[in-house]
Image (tube, rainbow, N blue to C red; front, side, top):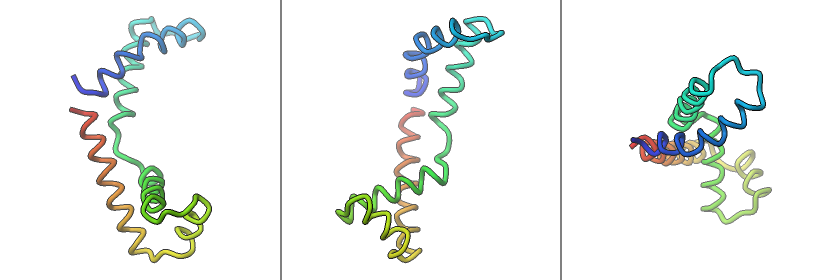
Length: 105
């Protein structure tokens, strides 16, 4: 099993029980539980979005620049050359994909 599948199994009972008992779902509990696990794994193993990559790149830049959040965002928006931002995006995407690969193992 992958890490994502293990996580889905560990949280499915608790989360799906509360959803099933407090909703008007037409699904039976076993079907809802399986559906919930499938959706969890799909979300956990999805390719990183552009927004996630951008957020990670800004955080990575902040870590490297030792600026506070306000200054980091100001520099990202106004002070950095696009080629520098692209480098941070590329590195951040590689890190996010490496984390995703670990979750799928």
